[in-house]
Image (cartoon, rainbow, N blue to C red):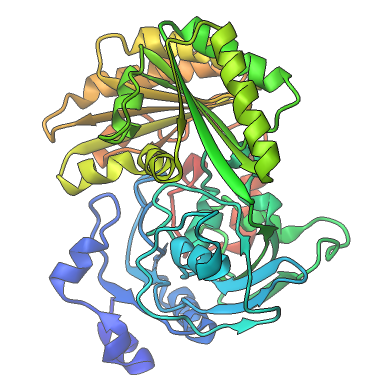
Length: 471
């Protein structure tokens, strides 16, 4: 690749080629030849057009929290960083919408939306060091939030969250990222800037093409501006923890909650290792073998009643211990639950994360089979009851036996497919990906997915090979 072409087109201040920086942007061990930092969509589109002409492979990079996801790319020439596409364009409180560039970190965006006056109700942790330039269409007292809680939200960018369809426990109440996206402007693999949707819910006639960008992992385009729906801040939030001696007791409690008239924000079941990783030092509640965490949000009277009902339900299912977490302890618990692998990664340990999606009614069966399969492994298991999702986390030293993990992953996948679902490896080292396909076998709709990729990106410019089936 001719680096001089990049310097002539964008200037040396926008092109990084030193070895230390390039190594930090490696994808599954493949080091790019250059990293580009565009400051607007026009520059990013110019780069993609040049990549088409020169037949370069471009890897979009937001916060880097999902770069271990997917197949090993076929080739990597350039990394396009969205870190300078970090402007919040519009906050419209009256219409409950926000428009921001894809490189905005989600934690910083929530920080702006919540406002200083409201943090007693909605705790936000952000390392925002400067006020972003944005235009507010409503009053200064905002009191709104974007109902997304993906892992590593302080590092993850809005574009990365949408492109990877990343979610957290609050998906139970607030739904998927695709339910929140109203419109996008993105750069097609040909370099054309395309806009879809708008600031209202009914902004599309026919098929909403903007939705195909959600979960496409940057293979169909690079997100630029994103408009999302907001919600008013809840007046109160609370979390109830209940520990049980057996999985049957934990699932019985979860089923009782799901069949009730309560509207929990989140409902998570954790085995012992999973709870130990999520619990903070000042949380004096033993897991008892299994723990159920229930989050509720809403008006103060509503939350008070729901907490009382949850405690009563847990007692009827013979809970060993019960605790209502205060705001700070609850915030630490949910943050640890989403981010506990970060410390391990920083220490150089191997982190493997499997995600199973299946019929909602089969979650107890999945947890039973996954528990039996991982009996001899220190595996942290969590299940999102009511969502049909389960996660398995394995953390080990660099010399961990990947062949055994591959066999364990295959067992998880077989059990999940028997329950009408599928399993993906959301985080895995490259060597493990050679033993166990991160995506599993393509489904019947793969033919359509392949045709879409071949039509919009015939040269394989964006993220070649990383998606399902090597797309």
